[in-house]
Length: 114
Length: 116
Image (cartoon, rainbow over all chains, first blue to last red):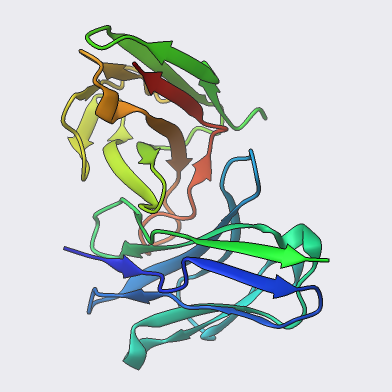
């Protein structure tokens, strides 16, 4: 079965520090990739998505992610974090086989200190 | 558009009670799904539907039933609540994007359920 791994469970950064959150998946075929963010007390919102084309994807709020097919990875990056980026971040994968569900990673809790 | 709505926001049940979590979307999306979110485990798929009258099981379906009589509504029923079903439940909807499967999923605000 498909699995998604987020190795960083809890990350603490100071404002203006750079961020990189890891995401690896196990499926060997064509995939659609997503990063979602959940701010405290809120529902999940889409940060960015990759279906095909340029493997460097830009999303909202200055986030970007790079799809590296050979490494089965889709890491999330931001050059300079802000206190308002404090949230939980989820990587999710959809196999492009007709199975319509998303498989989520366990999430990374990001805490940005002012 | 209201997007995806869920009721109730909070619910406390006693073991053995039954209840229905409501989910509705006004975006005419074909695909709807239910997830549960537990600490350190991300979101896990309970059931999903690709259209009215069609449902299928996800990763953790035991103890839950669903039906989809209309495009808009996708209720989740707990038949006999157990403490292990204490969780936050999210409903989501999506639509097909070109020939590449389903697009991003839009999530509701969630229902926080406690089973005593």
